[in-house]
Amino acid sequence: MAISFSTYDSSTDPLTNLENIEPWIKQVSDNKGFSIGEINYYFSSDNYIHSVNREFLGHDYPTDIITFDYSLRRKISGDILIGIAVVKNNSERFGVTFFEELLRVIIHGVLHLMGYPDYTDEEKKVMRREEDKALKLYQELFSN
Image 1 (cartoon, rainbow, N blue to C red):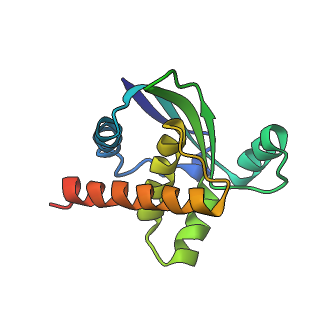
Image 2 (tube, one colour):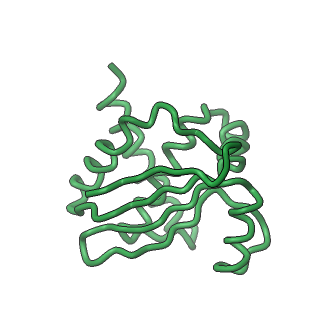
C-alpha cells in the first residue's frame, strides 16, 4: 500500500495535518472490501488543473478534483489531481473549514476509484452520502 502527496508549485502546498489521511483512507477502503495499491495525490494551481480538465475531459474551467483510475478489481490505484484554489473557494461557499473540504475531496477521489460515479443526480446523492460517512469516520477516529 502506498499513498503519496505532492504539489506542483509552492502556492498550492496544503501539506499540513495530513498524518491521519493514510490510515483513514485505509479504513474507508477496508470497510468497503477494497485494498489499496498506489494512490498519488497531486495538489495543483487553478491554471494547471484547468489545463488538465480541458485536455482530458474537454471542460474549460478549473475544478476541485480529477481522478485517473488505474484500479484492478478490488485493489484501488490512481492519480488524483486536486485544485487547491477551488477547494478553498468551495469551503467558503459551503461554510466549512478548508481542511474539512479538503478531506471531502480526498475521499471523493477514493470513492471514484471504488467505482462510485457522480454523473446523475441520484449518483451525486449516493456519492455525498458516502463522503459524509467517511468524514464521520474521520471524526470518530481522530477527534480525540
